Amino acid sequence: MTVSAAAVAGAEPDLVVRREGAAGVIRLNRPKTINAVTLEMFRDIDKALDAFEADPDVALILLEGAGERGLCAGGDIRVLYESSQVKGDLGKILWREEYILNARIAKFAKPYVAFMDGIVMGGGVGLSAHSSHRVVTERTKLAMPEVGLGFFPDVGGTWLLSHAPGEIGTYFGLTGQTMNGPDAIYARFADAMVPSNKLAALREALVDVRAGVSSAEVKNAIDGFATGETSGPVAAMQPRIDGWFAHDRMQDIAAALQRDGSELAQSTLKTLGEKSPRGMVVTLKLLRLARASSSLEQCLVREYRAALQVFASDDFREGVRAAVIDKDRNPRWSPPRIEDVTPEMVAPYFAEIGADELVFDNK
Image (cartoon, rainbow, N blue to C red):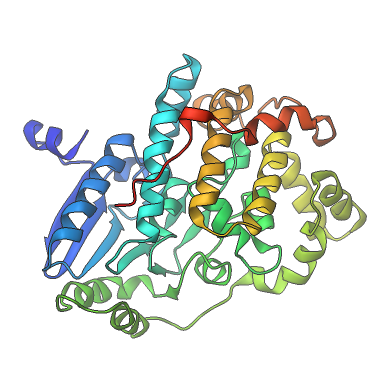
C-alpha cells in the first residue's frame, strides 16, 4: 500500500515520510515482514528524496526501520516469484527503479544517515550501504544471501563486495554468510558502531542539527556515540579466506577448500554446496568485473542485465520455492554441480540488452 492509499484507508502506511527538526525521516514501516520493500515503497522513497533535496530546512536524511527485528529483510521476494511464475514483468520494472534509486542514494547531495540495526539484507543493503553515514549496532545481522535463491548480490552489492579487503567480499558474496556490526565496518559496508541503547540519543542529536550542517559535522555527531570498533570475527579469518577465494573459477575455490582439512574450510565448502551452482559462477564473474569497474553505475548496469536473466530462470523460482514458498530448504538446482555450469549457460547473463539497458536519470 502506498503512502497516499494508506492515508485514504486510514491504515498505517508502508512508508512513513516526515520532517523532524532538520531531519528528513524515511521509515520503512512493514515490521511484520521485517520491512520488506515493495515497488511502491521504492517509488515513495524517490519522491521523498525529491522533496527533502529541494527543502532548504532539511539538513540530512535519516533512514530507519519500524519494529525491533531490523531495518529491512530485503525486497518482497514472494511477489517477484509470483510474477516470474507467469512470465510477468515485475522484475524488469522493480529492479530498474530500485537500482536507479541505489545510485541516487550514493550521490545524494545531503548527508544520508542509515540506522542499520538488526536484520539488513538484500534490498535493505541497497537502501543503506550506499549512504554517506552508515550506523550499525551489536544487533546488526547484515547479509547478501542471494546465491541461495539462484540469484546474485545485486542492488550494487557487487560494487560493495568488490571493495572489501582482500577476498572478504568474495567470501560473503558466495557463501551468503552474515556479518555482525564490526564485520560490516571491516567489509566497508558500514562506518560506525553505536550501541543500540544509544540510537535514540543519536537520533535526537541528528534531528536537532542545524540546516546546512556539513557531512563532517554529521560524522562527528555519530562518532560521539560510537564505540570505535572497526573489525569483527571475519578480520581474523582473512588470511585463510584470501587463500581460498583468490581464484577466478568456482572449481578452483572449491578445490582449495577441499585441500584444507580444517573445520572452517569444510564448513565453508558445505555452505557453498547448498547454493545455486549457476548463481555462484555468475556471482564470481560479476565480482571480478566489479573489481575492475570505475563506478557503482557500471556495476548496476551489469547487475540489471544479469537480473533479467535470473528472473526468467528456473533456478530463481526453485530457490524462492525452497526458501520462501514451501520452505523445505531443499532446492533442486539446474545444473546441480559447479562443473556442469558451461560458458554457454553463463553468457546470457552478461549480454547487452538493447532498449532495455539501465539508464540513470541523474537527479
